Image (cartoon, rainbow, N blue to C red; front, side, top):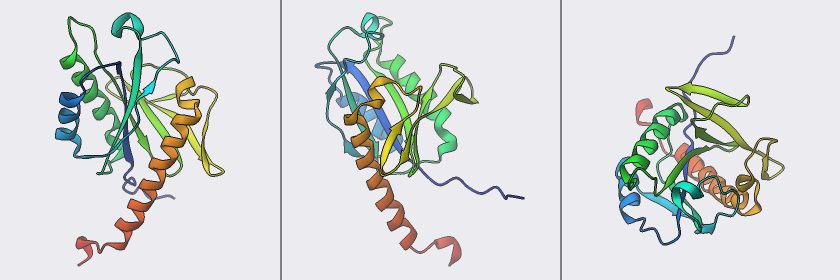
Length: 184
């Protein structure tokens, strides 16, 4: 019989979607106030993948990425998504979001996104939030699955996540070298 154990901490990756020219300083301050300092600020990329968000947010959308120095317990993904949804609402203007925040968890073997949309391949986490296995790490790279959205299939996103995976791997290795105060 297998024995339950604590989950291995994972790297929080936050994908931001916003109209070009959006001032992100207040958003970043709010995120770092809750999640700790960002140790990675990714490039701002064009978002040509879908027109789904344009009615609410306008055209010429951009995708940005943040990742945080402190790893997180993956069992808290639903709470993170609910909090980021609240932050989206707080920053909305006239009932229209100015930013879309997609929290994801990166481990050595996968990348998962949190979502409110139920589909056959998504696992309920609780409180209306689902986890989607978006990419798997095989053969030295992140690979998409049949349901992976077009943007997450792109080489740019997968290379970026590969770089963050390497940071996570090195941070895990360093953490294992440190003595555990609980054993002292």
